[in-house]
Image (cartoon, rainbow, N blue to C red; front, side, top):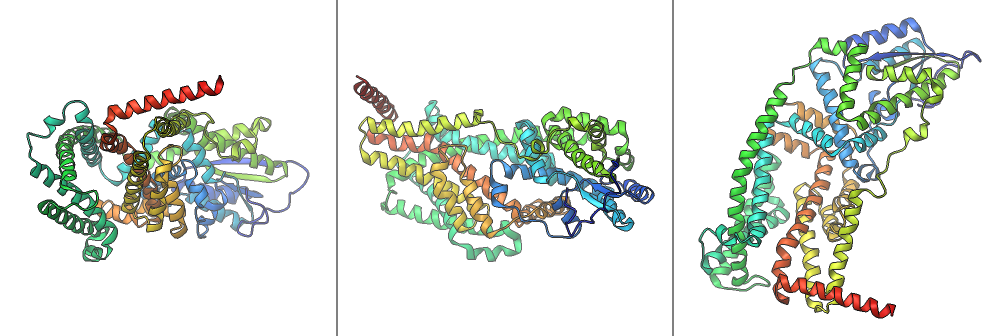
Amino acid sequence: MSDAGDADVPAPPDPPGDEPGSVTVLGTAHVSQSSVDEVHETIDQEQPDVVAVELDENRYRQMQGGAPDDIEAGDLLSGNTVFQFLAYWMLSYVQSRLGDQFDIEPGADMRAAIESAERNGSGVALVDRDIQVTIQRFWRGLSITEKLKMVGGLALGVTDPRTIGLSFGAIGGALVGLLFGAFLAPLLGLGDTLLLGISGSTTLASAGAVTAGAFGGALVGLLFLPSLESIGRSNGVAGGFTIRILAGMGLGIAACLALVAAEVSVGPFSVGTFESLGTYAIRGTAGMLAGLGIGVLVGAVVGLLLDGISGDVDEIDEVDIEEMTDGDVVAAMMEEFRQFSPRGANALIDERDAYIATHLHRLRQQGYDVLAVVGAGHKAGIERHLQNPSEIPSLESLSGTTSSSRFSPLKIVGYLLTLGFVAFFFLLVMAGVQDTFLLQLFGAWFLINGIFAFTLARLAGARWISAGVGGAVAWLTSINPLLAPGWFAGYVELKYRPVNVRDIQTLNEIIDDTERPIEEAFADMFEVPLFRLIMIVALTNIGSMIASFLFVVGVLPWLAPEIGGINALFNELFRGAENTLELLRGLLT
């Protein structure tokens, strides 16, 4: 609740006496014109000392036309807070859609309560919990399945289910097929099959040159040819990216093919290296094409299923909205939400009922007659608490942000991965493996993590310094999933690109514009600081995850021949374990 001395909030009059006051709870629908009319009429008739509204200070300030607070880096990037803002975005988007459908601004009932209070000389009390605390506790209360449903709901707002199914199916299938064909298939004895009968050093070297040139050139074009983006500016952001990448790919392929034709060695690239790359490229291409086909088929089926489910949802009409203040209807809606997520409902509804009731009870004890304007879903819970104020949970238990379990399964996995990484190098040292090989291993780990994290951060629009920080720490953070390079990149990015809650409304407006082509919608979303920041954090982390996987299935087999192959590498690990045990026996005896 706001203090009485706040300049922006009308202060209540002095308490009328030593007698306790009263509380009347008026339940409203936040997007209903009849609720707005009822608020005006009730306040004019009751003339309460205080009108309590379901707002916190930041939302009140925004409603009064003030600028929303910038979101602090620590608040946004600590833990899963980036994803908590996805939940906030989802809730905001649903309310915005309802408001657009019924041609009324979401929160108009709260605005009406404030205006009526000012007109009648009543004080205004802000009695709701801070929205960031609510969303944080709400997000932690959702299961993984529930979180995926919420994120999927946002995706359905941008495009239709069939497009989502085909897109994710194609991308996922191609990626899985590429990884399987290039790295996993040879381990299963399918490598020769995926080579499709292609042989010959020249063919393999050419395929490797095209692969290396395309990948390296695309990276060079993206990072070092920003001037070319102006050529495609008329096509939007995506057009600029396309021109830069295609130009870089063309230069890279031409240069690598020239090296193969001239049989020139440049650093680590020789004809033999290109032949090896060609083998991986052909296997990977075959796997990618097969995965793409399977992914499209699976995605099409999933998209049709999603389309059928979403098509069964009837449009909400005006009658339904006006009935949202009816007790039986509200109770049914709340029960349905509890079945979807009991813990989420506790954070979003039950805890706020208790929080609001605590402040209303305090005002009542001070002698004020209070009219509380709240969403209809909170009315029953608040009245129940007001009847038994001694049983209301303490504000301390309702106001703090929850923390994850000290020994959660995710943390245990993280500690095990960290221990495994350290043990891997320690055992190689104990086995007496030469320092050169150890430096090569560590250098490869550092470079592959750094390159992938840096590149994907830049693809998301990160500044050079932000992407550089994410890439520099990726080798360390990828050891432990409890850390993430995206957090570090995000912290630096926030120094140059502040975000605030109003960005969510901007995103809602972009999604609501159904006439806008999807490519243009995504380009516009990337111009919103909050969305770009979320993408930078996410893609930086994804880059590090991909690099960690490729290190195990690709880099280790590539470097292992220096000590006799993969089998020899495992033998060295066993020898290191034996030497360690011998050392421990010697110390203990």
